[in-house]
Image 1: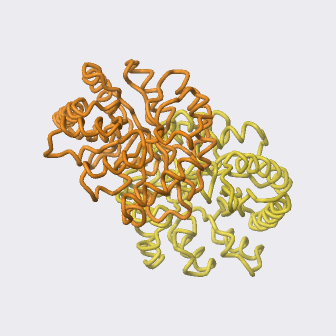
Image 2: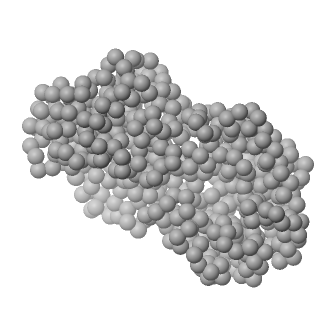
Image 3: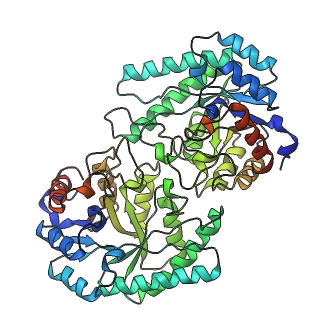
Length: 280
Length: 280
């Protein structure tokens, strides 16, 4: 396994970790000052700003843009609404290109209002991902399809298993398509070892997110734990990832409304750096 | 598909649906009076009572006992604690036998205190289930292993996929071992159709629980919905079950602390009967 303690540059920080309470430019400077290697920004942070300028600021700070978060949801109640969702994703991909993002993270969405048809939603996702792959390929961006924990199957994502995401990748078979593997969403999966190995074999691992699952969890959406504070065996997880050939950045993404979001950015980054070096 | 509206006797009611707010003897009478065919009682309800007498009351009321809920958790931190857990399950199986229960529902438990080793917990569950199958077979009771939604993977169950439960059944290969398939725990699974068909082919379907997944959900533990109030396509689910050969009772199990548990039992049973006839 790689020696993360000696290489803080292997750590990227997703800006959701700070709850969007400071301007992106400030967050970028803090992440770079702490010695990390990458940043995963969100679309909401660049709204109304000049994207190329932000991209330049990130590169000047010595950071790479791991993944741009995240896609507007794909499943829709009508063909017109689906087309609108695709168009909206094209605009987000234009922004990802302007940022020189390595990848664009797809959180698929799930049942449109009033629907109970998960299969239909999943078919729309597969169709939409194929369209986005083609558009992204022309802009040299990878598409990272992220399976989300089944607790989000109603609204946030109808892609809930790593094997399911890999099946979609195999079906579309675009060279710029792969998966984002997040410990929080996948740690419980009894087929985890098998499917991470498959993802490596099929050259589909684009990104790797870490945090921890707290026990008890107050809120499955915004009560993620700092690495080491929960029940996930993070070192075994990384062992699977690196055995599968993953050698990219490890991105920390914490949604923690009642805890970490309330702390100063520098304090969170300090703890994060220490945990990255010791428990990930 | 079977005509449920014409056959309320095909409906069983799990007593958790009433939040354990009335004595079991009263609940039994209400369920029978409403015209249903079965009851799924919990161990906590018979504590300190004469189990044979309760069993006789249930049969006299014209009800069958579908499943007895539920097993003490299996994974433990030490061999001694594991043995204690097995012994505790043997006592529960004695009670199930005294009740003439058709099956004993195993909710496996998961990580013991301080552990992050899901694989070890899963191995303990497989070992424990094999022991319980042997003990139950001598008492003519079926063992229904219930996969629980992955959101409970920390503490309540390390068995989180139907395919995983079926793999354990195949490995142990006891004739009295099968699965309890609950819509709430499995509806999101992209392999649902495949795995229900497999469960039928392998003669492993012991019981079938219904409720609904509300959107939004306030609490993943105690905010289950009445059938028809949520997002699960219950009719398609039943279609899969009956195509797989299931012809037993359909058991309603609602954990609903803030809603149904606060209503009079007769009112809940009235709504339940109507929904059973129309949306399940």
